[in-house]
Image 1 (cartoon, rainbow, N blue to C red):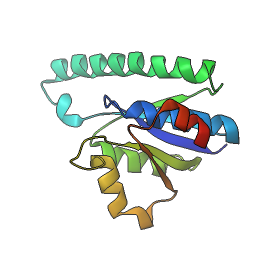
Image 2 (image 1 turned 90 degrees about the vertical axis):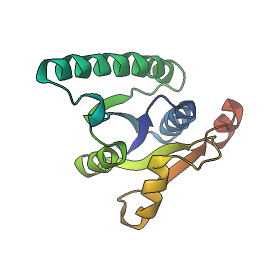
Image 3 (image 1 turned 120 degrees about the vertical axis):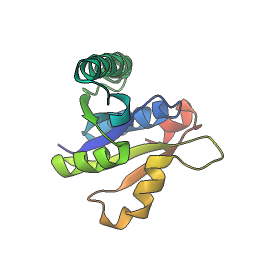
Image 4 (image 1 turned 90 degrees about the horizontal axis):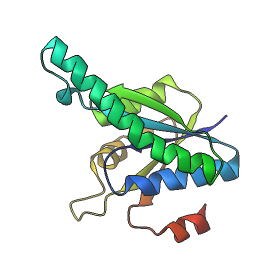
Length: 151
């Protein structure tokens, strides 16, 4: 089954990427893989402290994911898959692409800030010719109604 890979983070625009991926997967018979990355810098402390910080990060990600997963199951009828990795977000996204050949599309949301589309998009666009699949970039401030129209 072809999967749409979407990154789960704390950005406001993340919601649009998740909505788009779920609606598109439902209409094309695909799946949604949600990637959450715990930055290595967030857990590099003494061994005992690092384990506590890692566990807290996983709990926070799981709670955040469950909100979106419930919506995906209830509305577009898609059963999402959560993948949690540790490291630098773009590097981990590339590693996930390498590890899962069923990923057919990367879905990212562009930042609504004037500073640019966001670090992951900026990094991927530099190497777009070498990616194993296309990227769909969803405007971060696109309305839910418009997302529904175009998926």
